[in-house]
Image 1 (cartoon, rainbow over the protein chains, first blue to last red):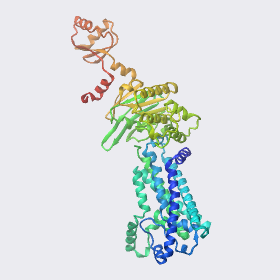
Image 2: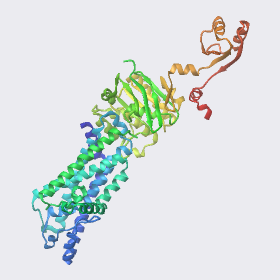
Image 3: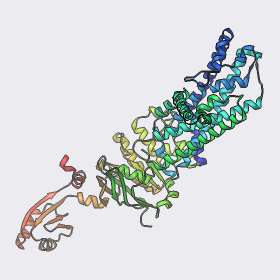
Image 4: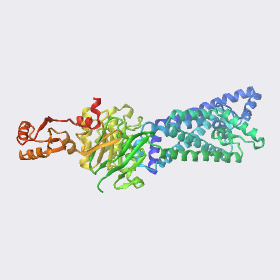
Length: 281
Length: 304
C-alpha cells in the first residue's frame, strides 16, 4: 500500500494540474479579497441593504457575504477567511482537482499497468485518498495564507489576528468538509469514468443549484410534522460548508465534522466497492 | 508443476454474448505463446482475465501451480501491455516508468535506464509522451510491462503502429529477453506471419473458442510443402509407399495421405500404386501458407 501511496504522491508532485490548481487557489484568494474590499466600500455607502443580504440565508450562486461589522474598520483574519471559504470558491477548485486526479489513470489507461499487480484493488483508492487529502490540506492552507496576506495589503492595521484557536478549529472543520466533498467527487469519477460529469456535478452543487430541491424536501418534511424543524442542508457537505462559519456553535462544528467524516468514509468505501467489482476497460 | 500458466474452462459472457467460451490454454516456462485470432475473436478478453483486469464469468486459471485466490500473491509476476499503452501524456518516459517502479517497490538503481535502453527510448530525455509517435508509445508500453523483472509478460498486439524496422527490433528484443532472462511471453496478434517469426507455441482462437493449440513445429509441419494423395485404400497405399522407401507421410483420413518427401516423384508414386492395384483418385502437390492454414481453420477463407 505504501508503494502505491508513494506512486500517487510522485504523480501529485509531477502533475501540472496540481500546480495549476494551486496557482488558481492563490489567484482566487486575491480576487476574492479584492472583491470583498469593494463590497465593504459598497456596504459603507448602503448599510441597510448590506444587513439584509447577510440575513438572507443560503443562496443559489457563489457569493461572499462580508460581515457588517467590517464597516466599523476592524476586520478579524478568521472572520475574513471564514467568509471567503464559506462562499464555495475553494470547494469548486477541490472538485476540479479531485475529478481530474481521480480519473486520470482511468482516462489514459495507466491503471492497466498496475491494477493486476494489486488483486485487492482497494489500496488503489486508499492511495488516491491520501494524495487528495494532502492536496486539499495545502489548498486550504494556501488559500487562508493568501487571503490573510491580501487582507493585510488592502487594510493594513485594520486587519487583526483574533483567536488563533477558533481559526484553527474552523479550518479543521472546513478541511474535513472539503475533503469529504473531494472524495465524493473521486467516487463519482470512478463510478462514471467521466471527469466532465463529476466535475460538472460538483460545480453545480457548489453553485447551490440543489438549493430548490433541498427547500422542497424541507417543506415536505415540515408538512409531515412541523415540530421536527428538519433542514436537510444540515446533513449535506455544501450546506455545512456554506453555513459553518468561524462563529458557529460547538454543536454546529461537531455536526459539520460528522458530516465531513461520514461523507469521506462512505465515498471511500463505495469507490473501493466499485473498483473491486468492475472490469478495467 | 507442468505448466507455468493454464486456463481452466475460462469463460467471459457479456449479456448473451460469450466473448470467451471455455478456453483451456497451456503455457510452459520459457514459451513465447502466440494467441492468434481475428479482431473480436476474444484474444484481448483472455489476456485481460489473465492480467487481472477482468474477472471471468466461469472458469479460472492456474499460475505457478496456484488457482483461485491463491494466485493473488503471484500476480505481481505478470507484466502487461493490453491494447493501447496506458501512459501519462504530460510526463516523460522516465517519469512514467518511475511511477510503475514506485508502485511495484522496485528500487534497483539504473533499472529505468536499462528498461529505456532495452526498448530503444534511451535518448528521449524530457520529451513528453504526448509528443511521442505511436511506435514510441508502444515501446514505452513494453518497457512498462517489463518493470519488476516479471516471469510472464503479456503483450496484446505489441507491434501495432510500429514500422517494419521497429517490428524487427521489438522481435529481437523479445527473443533476447526470452533467451537471456527466460521470460515467458504471451503475445496476441492477428498478423500470423509476424507472430510465426517469434512464437514457439500457438493458440488459435475464433469467436471466443480455442480451436487449436500447437507447437511451432506442428504448425510448420501443417504448412509445409507436401503431396496430397487421394486413394480408395489407404492401408495398401501405405504399404506401397513404405516399399518405395517413403517414411515421412501421414494418413489424414480414410482416403487421404500426405507425403512430405520426394515431392517431385508424384508420377513414380502413381505408377507404383497402379502396379499394386491401388486406385489413385487424385494426387497434387500442396503448399499451404500460414495465413491460408489459419483462414481455413477459422472459416475466414469464405470472406477473403
